[in-house]
Length: 385
Image (cartoon, rainbow, N blue to C red):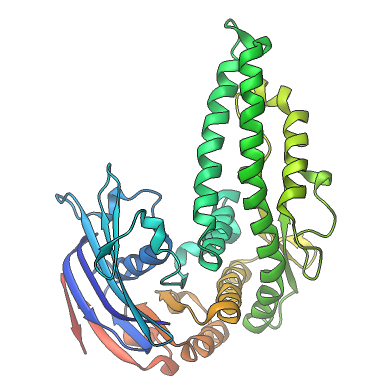
């Protein structure tokens, strides 16, 4: 898989850019603040419908403009598809494939698959659980685009259930003994369990499959460090069947997880009513990152944290490549952050990718293995060097 063409209009700092691309390494060179990362962000948005830097679409539109456009031509196994996304904050975004409108923007997911490694990835190790849940869910959607709908359904039901909990648990009102409110809560419990079981099963099976790739990638990046492992920390606790989310273990089953979630939601209902929020479900889970026998967060050094973050991305790349062909690899100004050995290991993987897009402030930051097409990025312009 590779990008043959990228065009952006009023995206971030760019009024207009039109780039012809080819397989192999493509390097964007320019001083910080010139918009290199914005171009990789546009590519990543086509693949995930989200940004690795911000949580909303508003910052993606150039100041003073109403909308932004991103157009790409993606070649996969000899077949080319064009994808166009129109980003309009405050309104529904629009998408087209081969110039024809699609029903929902998420219908374009799966056409382009990317794996991006950026300085922000240090938050995967040192940040809060939300960063790691987002990592899992984005990878899950890249692996199987239908999970975009599952994730959206779960978030919608969770908002509805939380709103009902606040109403039913409010003191001084009808209170938590209102039969109508409680029967309605039963309905939303079932909805939450249904969507949550699908999302949870996808995550558990993903972690089981990703774990060996991540461990191997870390051993390659930091051979003198302690061994690592990843696992899924579930809010279900002991109610989660033993062996789920473990490499070589039992595959998580949606039906069984749904039954467990319904039962568990009933068990914590009093606590949920007291707090006015849902205290159990995939939105409360985390990805465990273990270095040796200790959690990486709080124990890993700066170099070990970088290695773990890199291993997660390289593991993701290897997993996607093994299952559905090579994704496009995006490396955003990361070589300057890595020591010699880590740079060499990342360059080795990147040099063998079907296509890799790299950003760097100066030529010296880019390993010789990635001596492909060079673009010079200056204020508002991109020129092939």
